[in-house]
Length: 139
Image 1 (cartoon, rainbow, N blue to C red):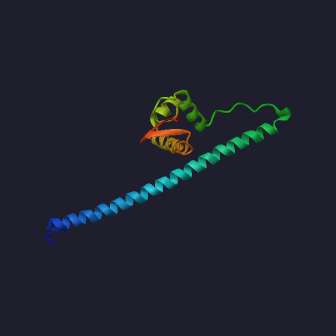
Image 2 (spheres, rainbow, N blue to C red):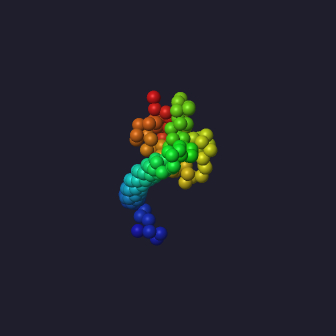
Image 3 (cartoon, one colour):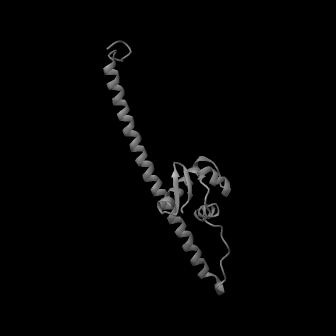
């Protein structure tokens, strides 16, 4: 091998490049799997949080004297998202556009949370994903 550590033989260079490509592709696949698992876990936890909030609301209604109606609470983000799609049935949204419409923060962490929520709504067949990063009301 010449100084500098790289072989001069083009065949050997191509082989080394292929090895590095294969290793990097395997790492990318592994990271994609982790992202999928974490996205699914996050969606499940968020759904559980929504269930807990609903349960608390029901119990709160039962605990009020004379069964007075509970004070109105703001809609969950999931409800707001579904409502936005229902109000704009033919519109295709990108996540950032949806955030702007709903008045939600447009920082990356918030966008990523909504992206996972939209993925859950797609899996529940409530909305469609006609393209990468694009969502619309299911017909």
